[in-house]
Amino acid sequence: MAKSHETEEVTQPDGAGVEQKQAPNKSGKIIGAAKWVLAVNAWKKHAGNLKKRASFPLLRQVVKNSSMANKILIPVEIIDDVYVAKSILGHRIIMWSTTAVFCYFLTILAKGLAVAIKFGDPWNTWLLSSIPMLLFTSFRAIYSYKVLGAFVAERNLRLSKLNDLPQESAVHEAA
Image (cartoon, rainbow, N blue to C red):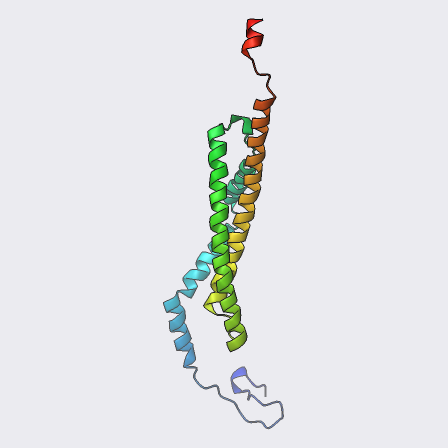
């Protein structure tokens, strides 16, 4: 006689022939409720929609246009002398202020390193706040230094062009 699927007994691998029954899973209701509260199914649905639109053609176009716009150089001849002088002053102020802020966060870094070494806490707030600010201020100061150098070179070039022009004197005009 052939056995049907319902009459088969589940045996353990060691051959003991003991039938196993699964206990009702109460954590399934808890997990289901948590998924409902967290809206897991909705998030999966939205992720599926986003995956379909993952190419982001508009974003790619904006990034391409902005990168092309950043490559356009403004000719320095059209910048007025007043704005060159104001830019030099502004970048000097930026450099001095970022240097002061850099020194302040350098002291905070020293405090954070002392706490990390003495108490063994490498994730203290002094380290977590000082390291990004040190990086930001140093890169900002370097950038302002480069721009300041370019503006000073442009100002010196304009001044040398003014000094090289032949100056009309009253003696030449009378002759």
